[in-house]
Image (cartoon, rainbow, N blue to C red):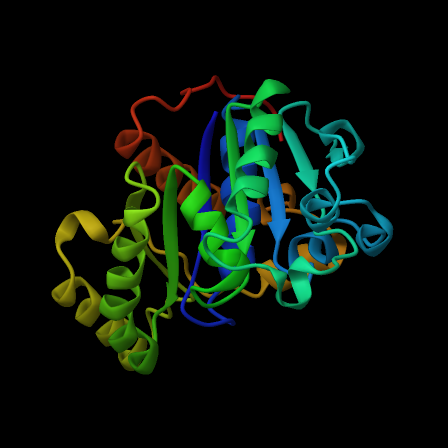
Length: 263
């Protein structure tokens, strides 16, 4: 199983939207995908299932070794797409986390998921690079950084990338797959300029070619508890996430290419 953390410097950059719709894109391609909500706010769960707060989830597993992976995985309408909610939290959420403190439990979770036959695990983390996010990145094979195409956030990205590189001390196999520009507004000069500035700051291989545009249909999809590609007339958005999936698979040649399945 390949594990990918979605991590960002701050909130509000489309991190959870990217995690949900990228996981759905992989699942549609035939890759057996597990989407894990490792954000204490429970954003993934709230976007896809309104009962998420009542589900046993990721933090429960970290807090109590007696929990089994079978008690956590929630099936969806797609055989290849499953979820793990954030759970009810506990000591870890309130400050018990931190790199080196309980990374072993996160790795145990990923190992348990791998034993269930998943090809890919995408972990949506909390904003910042400390606590559970540092633990998740330290435990995962790779990391993707979503970044809103706006001037202030762009300037902090090189520092965030440096922080990810430092985590390689504890996780030498970690691959920084790149930064994905989100909420791009092609009709706003400042947005396109910010996107161009980021591409000027980082090497070409550290910025995905695919950009995710700002689109009100993401809000509609979240309100309905669906990935956006499950809505009608969203082919352009769906194709964009398929292109991003292909870019990621090219960087992770060991990832299962899958075969197309219906949404």
